[in-house]
Amino acid sequence: VHELEDSGLHIAGRGSSPNTKGKWEQDAAIMDGSNRRAGAVAAIQGYKNPVDCARAVMKHSQHILLSGKGAEKFLKKRDLKTIGNPHGYYRPIISDASYDDGTHGTVGAVALDSEGRLASATSTGGLTNKPPGRISDSAQIGSGTWADERVAVSCTGQGEYFMRVNAASDVSARIRYTRSDLENATACVLEEISLLGGQGGLIAIDRLGRVAMPFNTSIMKRGFATWRGEFDVKVF
Ligand code: ASP
Image 1 (tube, rainbow, N blue to C red):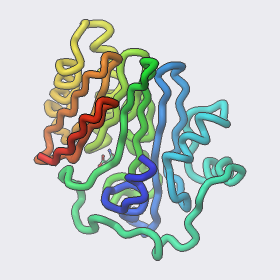
Image 2: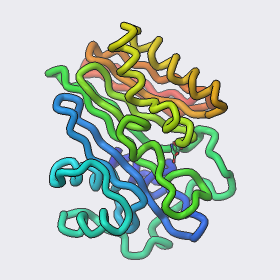
Image 3: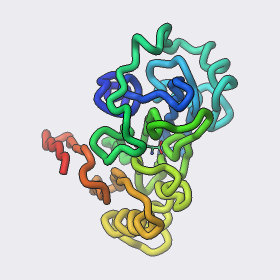
């Protein structure tokens, strides 16, 4: 996620668009499914890698989500890269659309390690033309980011819909309570979002390494890699 933020190819990190007041406010979250520790930042300004800031909250704070000035004060004590001149650093990947159609989007990663531990992270510059203080689903554990002992999920799309469905943790709830498999659980969550009129997608991996990446936008850039050397990247 750190690399994707730095690439400037997505609406996260360097590619983020400013809000309606011309400021760059960033959101990110990270969750370790093996112990359910989590950290998140919302509406922070001046940090190069919001996902590293989320990790710092997970590691060094007793809280989960820190926002705005309070978060920035907490982060100041950590060894995190800052941005001196936002106008010189950010290269907004889109500037005129009120909603990204999935071409660029939020960035996220989900992972399963060799000991069966799952983890998830998401980072976003948020919706283009968002108002100051608006917080995305990406920063909210349960809505846009989730990992537990069953599944790791990271979402992208119109965050308000993902919050209303509590999308990321609902994938786990469906697996747990209805004994759905990953494909079915993710499809059902996306269907709920569609029924409300929302657009987006998600990436998910379960404890057996099964991957699902459904979306209802025209495209969603996505990929996977395995220890066996399998590797694939898709757009459509
Ligand atoms: N989910 C993000 C948000 O609501 C946007 C995106 O995924 O493109 O800010």
